[in-house]
Image (cartoon, rainbow, N blue to C red; front, side, top):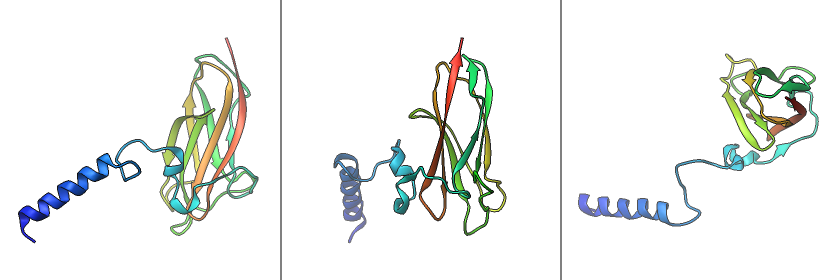
Length: 146
């Protein structure tokens, strides 16, 4: 195939990817697409090595900065090995993602400290995705006073 024909075919394929619904696109992804394809579910049950542990005050003042510590392994510590580690820890306030920390195998301890401020109360949610299972979630109610 000539260079001109190859270029034309590639242009048509690229245009199809942009215009045809359901095909690959570059841009923002929904939460389900962020997980490893084989592990799209989020587990909310307790597991001592995988459940995130959220440490934060029960009550804060509106707009005041405070720390939220999320460690993975509510009953122990999740391993950080080349073959099995926590890919990331994400912090949500209700359904809005506040922050996300990506972890490196071996060099990263499965813990993150976020400094945040809130305008209103709600539920803090932590989601962690290890390499060999679905994401794991835990939550903590937080009250905001004036």
